Length: 430
Ligand code: NAP
Ligand code: HSE
Image (cartoon, rainbow, N blue to C red):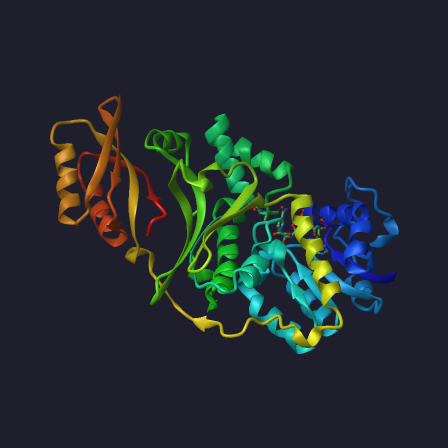
């Protein structure tokens, strides 16, 4: 049996998952790869921290030099998170001819080009399956199994933390803060959960996925992004009454001349398969011109599901060793594509506003909508608090720019107390 030494950079949620899998599934790994995988060193910030796993203290180090200068270590597994020093450490490892595996979507979405190019320049392998949707093999799926397709549309629930929060708010009436705390305790959230709840994490993942799916050069800042912090139980209840569920969706569409790339809370029909993706589960719904519609579903976060993808990547390195002439980290033919501005998209919308409840107010609002080509599908008027009423308006398909112009005028009405929420509706048919 051949032996290979690897090092982990980080021993947090994912690092511990990788440790457990390599130790518990050693026999399967040996059979499938022909290698006995030994974790020879683990980089951490604090050697004295309680870790909840039984790991010999001698494996832990706070000094990267001990890893990078060790010629016996052939694979570096980066599980620290953040851009720096993760990027520098990976570049240094490649320079030293060590293969690299990472779960770090932030560094890939923002600085990925440099890493892919370095991997090719130094002739090493670079794998990153765990960076999108945890345990779901979507990177491999898009890169290989679906490679025959022109991918037309892609809708993903790709952040476990926000899906956990929205599911708990919807199904168990939990408040936002309690649900977020639970997601953090379960190891789903990023070190700074702002990345999850404000949609950055999902936008990083959409950037990575859409470059692969559309063969496009996508910069993370081209992805339109909104998080879930503005969602409350009032919207969840109105959405339910209207036949919808609210999900943080990552949406990518190839519209020929332009790509549509956006992450935002979305009302989706409760009958759609994505509406039944709860808890930390993720799912990616893909429409390809040959395969048609398909959905990949599984745990998108957590120690073992994410560890599963990371260890799978380590096995890919081991299987491809000796076959490097056929390997390239850089995906060729990445075209620069125009990205559709959000004001040009055409969707249905959910608008919740509070108005003074007096005769003629509805007429003033519908007149403004009419002037801006916004057609209303339904209106719910609810509750009188003092002299105020809540209006929930659902539109037909409309141009977002027109809707925004109408909203600006509605804000000037004397009867308008507040614009409480504006959400997009996805019906998946265009
Ligand atoms: P985490 O629990 O915060 O763990 C990070 C680990 O990295 C800790 O062990 C920390 O050391 C170490 N570390 C951080 N900065 C370091 C530095 N400058 N030098 C040395 N060690 C450093 O994070 P995680 O949840 O495991 O996530 C790790 C990566 O996987 C991130 O890129 C994340 O986005 C990605 N990911 C996470 C999940 C998930 O479900 N959590 C899923 C998919 C992908 P100490 O322990 O000593 O502080
Ligand atoms: N924080 C991320 C999530 C981890 O909640 O989905 C998985 O990438």
